[in-house]
Image (cartoon, rainbow, N blue to C red; front, side):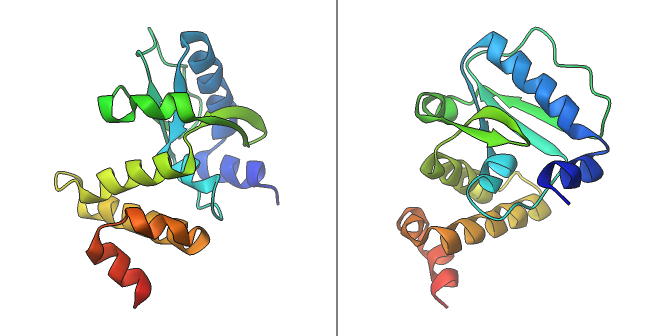
Length: 153
């Protein structure tokens, strides 16, 4: 089974919606993929229903969805520089601007440290950070001591 087939099973056909989303993002200009699907570009994928994109400005409208895909746009000022460092990677068979590895990691660190996020979301962020550090040990230098210590133990 291909990654695209797995993604479509998980999202009830979300790859078509994902492709429409990327076309919208290409039209509005500056964007890059962050968080979950971006993490999956650097480590073994774990598919979810969420797609998070940082944009310079919000689109006038989001693509009409026909799947279970959940789209989240952010204009968070902390993430705006991610766009200039993003690289084109193939995601679900289409070229997509994806945040650079260190930027994906930084975004995950911010999410993991955010006490307003649900515990289950923060634990998923923690797991993504562990997966990233296992694949890219040099990233541990960016981690706070309590998280880095878990990786060494």
